[in-house]
Image (cartoon, rainbow, N blue to C red; front, side, top):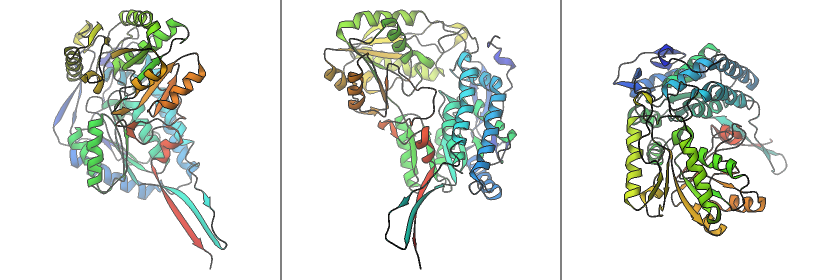
Length: 492
């Protein structure tokens, strides 16, 4: 069965989703455009403080009337299992909605993103009855133990590059831990998250436990962060915006934040990486996937000088073999970037990198694609010095710089970034060398013989340094949405 579809036939949800239903509120209108052809997808309104206040009231009421935090954890899990099943039932619709309105290709949104979103919900549902405390050693006639409790209302601010899956990393553990959620979509990709909220309502999640509001970051997003009844914030986005979120959270109650921010991730290729065709494919995918709009993007290739020419030639050949096209065409292999503004930002940074001494090996220009889409050519640069703006700043586009090395210590030193520490990878057949690199690189995630997150959800993902703190996924991902209480009992 073909996955291709006509984007004009997809039903577009509208309004905010608050208290278990769609709600229209006044506010500045924001046009949502399809990245593939710049045609209108729909219109949302900036909800601002009014939408957030209404969502918080709905969340507070839902927690009180449903007993969500106090109910038997297995009953909470049953509701979330039904939510996951509803997502799977609507995977075709959700995947088409995601593909039409984002840079995600339909070949990966229906069987990939939508189904994986359901899997994330199911994974965290299984944690509902596994949030355990510990009993600590005390003197005779006393008992000391800890327990984990929800914050009450969690705030989530979701990016536009992987809308459904990153949203699930936040709302699924928050709900499983017993919280209600107020979540802001990106103004560029709101519709699939609104549809997810409707799935939750249809599955029987009490109205008000998952609220989705639309708007700008500086209005609606800021209102979520600053709201006194929202106890924790989970944010994914740029490092600069993450710093602003942390500052505002500190000013409005010293509330905790979970930040998954930017990166300048390196992939090291050693002299003995294995099959060169396979390595070249992994390296190319590492910086071209999702048109380069990935926080963990492998934007820096550090390759042994002895194999550098051969590997670079093979990688460049793969940049020429792509098929750019609309995201709703299943034969498309390379997507547009999300917006004209993002295209201009990428190009301006590339041109400045070149002006400061970098050499263009391929790309650095608009890629001719159909329908006026925002297609930026896969770009490989050489001679990007550590004082070049292209080394310091994140492109968030399909751009990779190449550096060669003569010994592994030099490669490790080159991989360290003064600002970022999100991820890194090493391609090698030498396990001892792989472990050496994994231990030495200053990054929150390190992969061996791949670059990018595995579709499993059992490991905790997050960055170091300017790439943020706190974790998505795994046991740590749900514990972020709980606070630990210590109890001491003195027997009378």
